Amino acid sequence: MNCADILDLYRYTEWANERIAAALLPLPEETFNRDWGGSHPTLRDAFAHVVASEWIWLERWNGLSPADPPAWMDERGAAAIVEQMRIVNERRAEFLGALDESSLNARLAFKFLSGKAGEHRLGDLLVHVANHSTYHRGQLASMLRQAGATPPGTDFVYYRDECGPLPEA
Image (cartoon, rainbow, N blue to C red; front, side):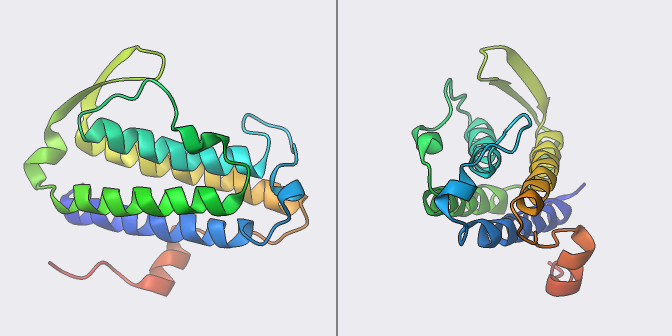
């Protein structure tokens, strides 16, 4: 992948996350916090996990290795988590805007929350995070169905149909 591909991937990720957020915001807090089962059993838990994971990785890309999830992970309402998502989006846009092709191949050392050391190519980590969010959006769609709501389509082809290709540099 090159920088243009990464920018497009994150344009898609933000588009899809915003669509999920729009489906979560009108839900009653009781529904948002209801246990539907699974590894992140509530809509709140799964959505907060997506946003917090994106935050943690952004911190790592910026040379930090948080030892704990962000404090706002305890927020119960969708609006507070959506606000954090948008802050992450803004900060990540600054980071992505400064990338060049050579930075994608650079190895990045970091620590997982467990304290275990890791090291990977930055380009691979960027793909990993977008893929991770896609996986959990699928779980959110399933929980929205269980809650009686219609989840938004977040497939890449829907994004491409709605947003078109990334403009040529």
